[in-house]
Amino acid sequence: MSDGNIAADQLRLFLERVERLEEEKKGMLDDIKDVYLEAKSQGFDVKTMKTIIRLRRMEKDARDEADALLETYRNALGLH
Image 1 (cartoon, one colour):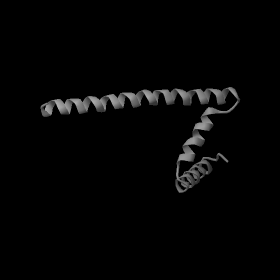
Image 2: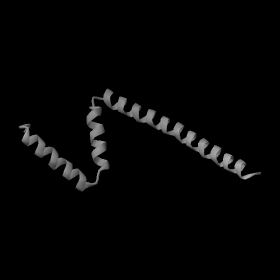
Image 3: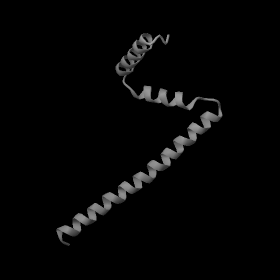
Image 4: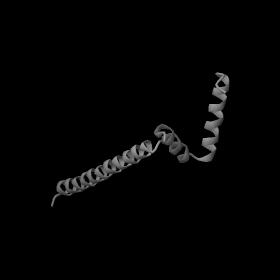
């Protein structure tokens, strides 16, 4: 095999791995969508759930800073 064939084989393998992972990701995204639909059918607010998930991913300091900034903006606009 020449170096060109080895590189082509490696490239093909990388591409196939990415394609498999993309399929798995699509399946997981579909599963997440189903969970949100189920939660919505049970009366939960999906937009608020997504906000909570985003907040839970944040470090506590970053979350506290975001909360303080939001409170500052709300106060500035009279949204008490």
